[in-house]
Amino acid sequence: MNSLSNININCKSNFSINFSGGDMTSDAGVALLKEFVDSIGFSRMVKDAFGEACSMKTYDAADLLEQKLLMLLCGYGTDDEADHLAHDPMFRLLLGKKRLASQPTMSRFATRLDEDSIPKMEGLNGALLRLAYKRKHPENIVLDVDTTLIPTYGKQEGGAYVYHYDAVGFHPIAVFDGLTGDLVRIELRKGNHYCGKEADEFLKPVLEAYNRDYPGTNVLLRGDSGFATPGLYDLAESYGYQYVIRLKQNPRLVEAVQDICDDVAAEAARSDKTYFVLYCEFPYQANSWAHERRVVCKIELHKGKEQSLFPDSLMFVVTNLAAPIQEVIAAYCKRGTMENFFKEAKSAFAFTHMSSRSFVTNANRLWIAALAYNIFNLFRRFCLDRKWKSYRAHELRLRLMKIAGRVTRHANKTIFKLCSSCPYQDVFRQAHVRILSLAA
Image 1 (cartoon, rainbow, N blue to C red):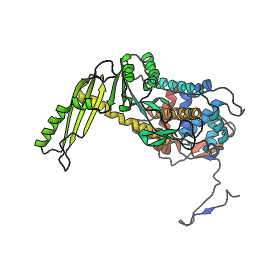
Image 2 (image 1 turned 120 degrees about the horizontal axis):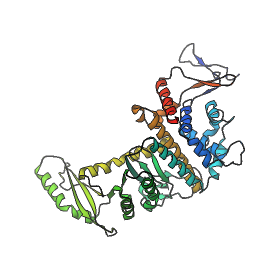
Image 3 (image 1 turned 135 degrees about the vertical axis):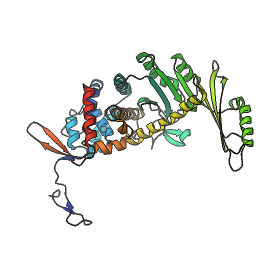
Image 4 (image 1 turned 180 degrees about the vertical axis):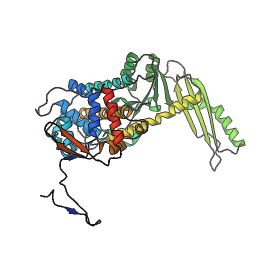
């Protein structure tokens, strides 16, 4: 009776609402994502990797992983929201369950994941990327490596003070494809782990895979000064790959460009301009390097009110690129796009929701979030047109996922009648046609 009682809205006369609309969903668009996942064969891969039965006979590990992925794809980042979706007709139909797994079941599933589960997750991610490259073979790959902060609370294993961020948390390392936004690999690390430490070991499997599977592809490795380690240079050079990595400023580097800085300052003193920029290069060998390498430098001078005459910005980049200096600097500066990838991963795919006390459990949770991020990114790349590819996950969800749908049941078929006034029906249909073409 409560669902039939009207709620009068006083701001409008002759207007009331109630909850007697029938069996409905507010996430009808998730059917597109499920169709995409099945069409590329990812659901079968999940079954192969996590097909073992779990203690709850109603759900096996693959069922729970797929439910978690669908929840993340629709923006439901915590296990608690499994209870809110328990009776959602669209989720139940897509997952083939009378009721979705509850929050305790989802949390127990995460706890059961161990160190052996991490390589399985990484294998699934590698299979996703191979599917993408099979669809469109890459001519150029830009590997952006960086670290970020995931806050921790209480006594979570691995949480420590991260100096770079002046906060307590985990300090994971990740490598993205800077051209596509694909998350190639990620690893949860303790907070006291310096960003460049063992970065060459982290990247070695990635470079090995590209060298084996995509010979002849142009690969560029990009990183900030935290990754200025000879081990990383040697690794890239051993595969014949190129790199642009920033160097921390030191007295030897400054001394190498001192004469040019003096010339810039002298020119500035004779000019009324307020901004000067100059590029140069020189061979350089740090004490820990086995041989000399090319270093390029960008010198900037901004004349303020005090008419300061010393360059206030020096950018040093070590590289094995043969390109002109300005192109090398421009190639390095484009690494800023990686910050957008991290931002979307955190805000839209729950990268910061590492709520377990166990470090291994949180490492598995991070990989599940990474899988959801890549699935959504591949869906955006292969199933949407150019304009829609530029939209971020939040906006795409609001336009294509969060569509109201009413369930109507017939003898042998269930039909979801979506909102008739949805302004993006054509985009929805076009995306579905492209998904079917992927399956074909």
